[in-house]
Length: 249
Image (cartoon, rainbow, N blue to C red; front, top):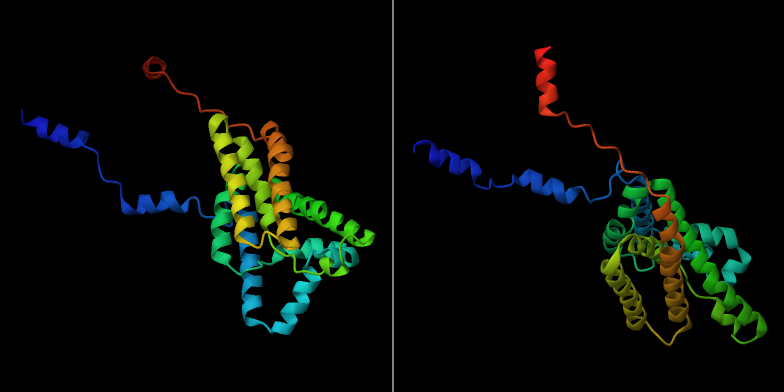
């Protein structure tokens, strides 16, 4: 009878140490070791965000105009604008984008590595930009749109992370995939309606978001599922009878 209280105490659920709780949460935070692409990219975006805030406004305006992927600038400086437009945040809300990258980019990198994640991200950025701005160029050339329609500031990383989001959604299964896809589409629609829906910039942006998300879903999702890393083999489990036999010999 005296041993029963001790046995009950051993069987009772033990409180999880505070340090263990924090470690569970922090394992999802991008780090240079676990997610070097996500972490390094966020560092670059933090640097350009601070530059936009504290540098000379005239200098910033020149840099942003060079980086913009609007139709006019993309025609004159295609490589420069495509390479540098994804280094700036249009609204300067770095913390918001850090949270988005933690949810939509870092998980893909943990599963498929930094190189493949960077390829998915930047291919979506380039494809969605060209898919939306080349028609604007054609409409300006034909006279259907005024030349002023090609001059507006087009910078940001949204095309890239919507591509990774689409790929992540495809990797889900069953009803969870359908629900996640609906949430992604609603999120894109929410961005559109809370902006200026009647403006050309908003129309081009929402089409770019849709293009990027579906490119990630239909193109990259299938390829990543086929080429995902194989799971490491489970270590062999020694059977008790074999261990005992070995000890006797």
